Length: 230
Image (tube, rainbow, N blue to C red):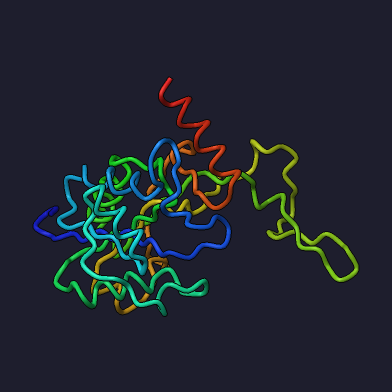
């Protein structure tokens, strides 16, 4: 609880995955991917209840091994490849009402720390915002990105009168890192999106913003993890 407001945290972990089969429970850094998020979220000073939303019995068992609560199994129709990411959150809020804020923690961000979780929650309330999401400095600047026309002519994604010749001269831009999303529950149920014009951003460092999507991401994750331990 924070400032008298109750907080529900949801870790979505469906059984299907095209990029990496059984991604949410594969072993990375010596333990299941899902466990990294469970263990860090349980350190939070503000989360009142932490649940794992899954459609898969094996994933549910792994979650429980790491003291993650699985109060229900998500319907299969809410765990398809084309299921919107907000769907399991809204489903959980229907079954577990009366929380003031909801936090979404994707298991594919294993290096996110409790300082990021609680920092994002704190910023949301400090700014009196309806939602706050974690971001990090973008690896590539959109000022050097182009569309390719039908006749293969380069068309700038961002059209400006004067070109930037050096990267350090380009404006700093940020991208979503998928690590932490928080929103007022009533507002979220109305908008059905964490990302609206009034959403504020919480900046996370690059080394804690790794998002596991393919095998190369696992290699990078374990390399960063070794470096952090050293």
